[in-house]
Image 1 (cartoon, rainbow, N blue to C red):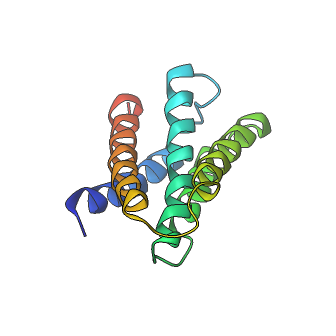
Image 2: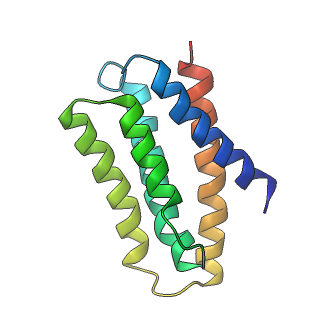
Length: 127
């Protein structure tokens, strides 16, 4: 496993943990909301692509569920997060029916982006 994949898993877990102990801020802070929505989209993309390319399970959906559970957003904000996750999933499910080199490259890009987003959310909004 590439090092950034491990770092992303750790960062996504840390982001969910951080959200569990911090007061909800999604609706209060537009820059934070945009990053959270993008992270949700990345997680949706990874959920589809990783399963397509042989990783069976729901790790990425479970991480999204953990973020929503920790954040406890108002219904309108929760729907935005779910919509972003589903959009990320659909973008790739509409274009990839099998694992290809392009799908593997997309996984690598999204793993890196997801790790970067998670780390940025923690470092900028952690305190």
